[in-house]
Length: 487
Image (cartoon, rainbow, N blue to C red; front, side, top):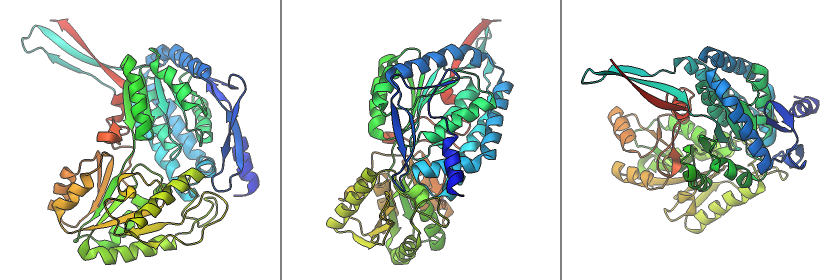
């Protein structure tokens, strides 16, 4: 792709706020810069929304709610299906946008478009399958009915690491259920969401049904919306720290909330594992999205009997990865999102080494311009290291050894988080046993990638609550109403 093509893709993205079906400037006219993390260059300047703009977006969503809820399910379904088709048709443009503003290699960005589009197709199919129930009361005196109805106007806060898929995963079920929405994308990566909402307009989503407010003042914009009684649902993907704050704010009006928060995923390699397959799996679980994923393998436990074989093969794979601008052919590891992110990951590495870990790769040369870091492998990481407790969110793998199944499960569960876990074994009895004992919302058995639009995504403990995707995903946007009718 030429520089001209890239410039045209960026120039085609609207840069205003999308409220009530119209593009507008922020109140006061302020803008925020969007930078390419691979080069530091400014890609575009977008509207920097204010609390007043947020309120205008919620008013638009509220005004549109009744009509959208009354729209026939088949019509809502067809709109989502058209959105899916348009997204697939424009996959290369969306992939390029994501690589430019977030940094992931273009091949991974294309994969996110495919994955993200599936939420529109999946929930297009679910829109026409919303149903209740009927039964006769045990005493025979009445009919008991339940019906499903949309919860109402929703607030969505999406993260920078998957700027398309985290939006479609929330917007798809909301629209299918008959809910309107105000979306606040991350300030680091707003272009993808702005392009997406324009696509939704083209697909036939009525004015006011989806509104987008970009802002660098997230707290100031979101708090009054969360406390406003017109909002009936909040869905958030991001850090546990921010999630706790939003839950506290939502308590005032008992707002319905779903939270997809941080993770500290264990990746366990048992002594009977297929080592080659396990190395393939850990490369996916660790290095997908440059390691900037809440599902990324954070603590890698390897049985002592296979530790050398696994560690040598894994380190060799990590050393061989090509680091650079994600738009360049053959690049496998792009930049981290910000310079601050690089500093934090390096802090975790330095701390681990200072308490006894051995760095076997990670000092290879990387581009001097941009937020780059060499893929790093640490062996024999002590339990006292910060990297064992904190999300790494970067291309660093921290390995520990074990000899006992009960011990490694205990260590894997020894965290406040509970989002994703992975393990490799050839023993089917062990596979079921360990899957049941791991305290996580999602478990991959002999698999390094577990996300799927047809499966419920979400965690337990400090990783949040609620599920996105799967049959369960639309329930987050539906209320159950019980009706009693005498016979």
